[in-house]
Length: 194
Image (cartoon, rainbow, N blue to C red; front, side, top):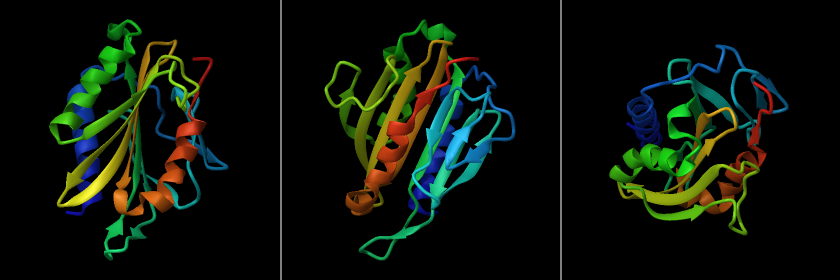
């Protein structure tokens, strides 16, 4: 099984465990216009980096999207497939406490070996999000002696929707391709009306 497949399975599995109560915001159909995902039932608008990114999985039960990039051959000849995963759920029980939400959702990743975490919150100078109630985390992990970078974003919006965003690629391609992740990160926008 390739490295990216294992990570996507981990993302889906950890989300399934952590999301005991999933609120269904998404319909089975989403609209892609100019690489922007606009779904009136999903609590987030975001832009895919370019036309190399495609929807790989839409899961109505877990209310999530997994996007994969066209494979990139790294300097070692490996086919690397970066991934962006986005999920939403009812987060009413967290009472707007995004710190508790992020701790619970991050736990499976930490147990799987994600380390060297850098946290950013709204008060930080380099905070890249427009969301006020969010935590932005960058970490790394190693799988089969291949180093990865991972961004983990946790948001609770004004409608008590908990949103998780995960962006993952190997370090071997990050110098050239990490900017694609920043396109999506900076594009994350809250839907103002339910």
